[in-house]
Every structure is written in C-alpha cells, then in structure tokens.
Length: 218
Image 1 (cartoon, rainbow, N blue to C red):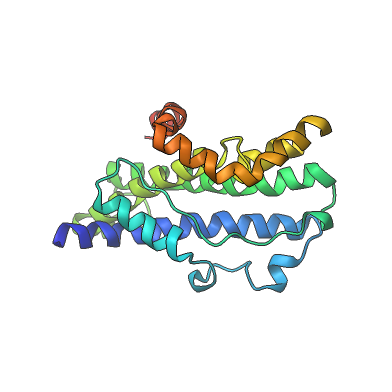
Image 2: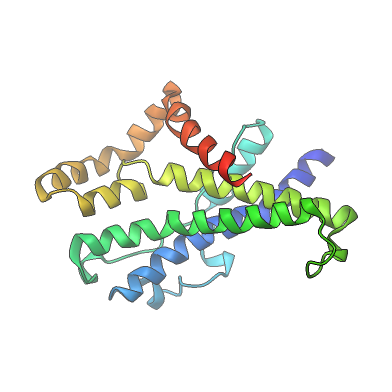
C-alpha cells in the first residue's frame, strides 16, 4: 500500500501537467487562429479542476498503476474548438491538432534536461544544493515519469486515427477527397483504438517510436 501511495504521488503532478498543457495548447493555438471558444469557456488555464476527466485523468491512470503497466496513459477533458472559426481552414485544424503533441514533446525535453541535471549533481548549477538526498531523488523520479508519460501521450496522439490528433492532422493535410474518407472514420475511431489495444497491435505501433525518443532523451 505504501509503495502504491508513493507511486501515485510521484505520478500525479507529471500526469496533470502533461494532459492539461496538451489541452491548453489546443485552445491557445485555436484562439491565435481565430477561434475564441476555449477562452470564452475558461479552458485556457492551468487550473486542473476545469480539465480533469474522471476516467482519463483519474480512473485509467490508477488502473494502470495498480496493474503494473509498463507505461501510463490518460487524458483531460477535450478543449472545445470550433474549426469553422479557424483561419487557414483545414491547415488551421492541423496546426491546432499538432500543438498538443508538440507541447508534450517540449515537456519531455525539459523533463529530460531536469533528469540529467539532477543525476549529474553539478554543484555550480542553481539550486544544486537543494537537489541532493531525498529531494533530488524525488525530483529525478518525477522527471523520469514526466519524460515517459509525455512521450507516450505524444506518440499515441499522433497515430493517424480520428479523433486522435494524428487523425486530425492527416485530415488537415491530405488532399480533400482522401481527407473526407479519413474524416468519416471518426465515428469508428474509438472502436479502432480498442481493437488495436485488445489485439496487441497498439504496443507494436507505439513501442518502437517511443523507444527511439527514450534513447535520444535518456
């Protein structure tokens, strides 16, 4: 029980930061491209209370922790975007979709830098003294979890299956006829994802890409 509580505590902050920043990035990018929907609904904020999804932010991560899953996954409540308001049409939609995974990549890079910084124990760096001992170990563990979680979130969301971000990016970039066909798959998107997970193909798609980024950053 003690180990579970400690793991949950170490996971909570990186998980919340990753999923919330992912959604805020969508809303912020949409606002810059002409759609104020997320701003008007108070969703461009780091306040976790407006973003928490009971299943994606709480239940699923807890299940994965308890089951000893090799990686964590989760999501926040999607930020609403009115694609009809966006400048640039389908390309604008692709930019909004890409902003979430790219934010996770940025967080993974920053977390990796923090992990290496605290591991190296360089005395001349700011706050180095406070990062020794228990605090240093805790920061390193959280940074490592943050790297892995942000990369998983990025890679999974870039799969070209609507309604994942990768699907929306492809709809925004493909020729109109192909984009229309792909967009029609959105109603079956969650079913396709569940089939990928149940069949084990999910891991074969995600793991190779994830390993490349992990080797590069860690």
